[in-house]
Image 1 (cartoon, rainbow, N blue to C red):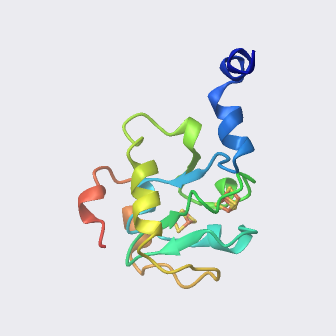
Image 2 (cartoon, rainbow, N blue to C red):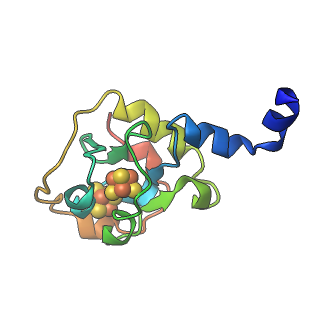
Length: 128
Ligand code: SF4
Ligand code: F3S
């Protein structure tokens, strides 16, 4: 009977019950733009800073949605709504968040940030 009930519960609900809620993900358009408006609104300080990109720690993100509209280049997406071809950024955010320090305050964006808005194929320019 118990086995029966477990099979009827969607896997996502089981994960949420264990504290693994959905995460938001920073994607390619952040690279070399790095405007940092996003970090100021995060209630749980889950942004981590690298040289020219920010990531969200999926272990900390509480899926509050506040950061998504703050990004001027629309680089932040729910993991369920990642643009086609950017799905791998979920794994990349998790990996780099473990290596980079937390950032909670906005700093000056790169001087040439504007030039890089919306440019394709920026992943190769990611500095680690
Ligand atoms: Fe932080 Fe909320 Fe954005 Fe997650 S969704 S990174 S908790 S602001
Ligand atoms: Fe990047 Fe947008 Fe934040 S450019 S640093 S995700 S505001």
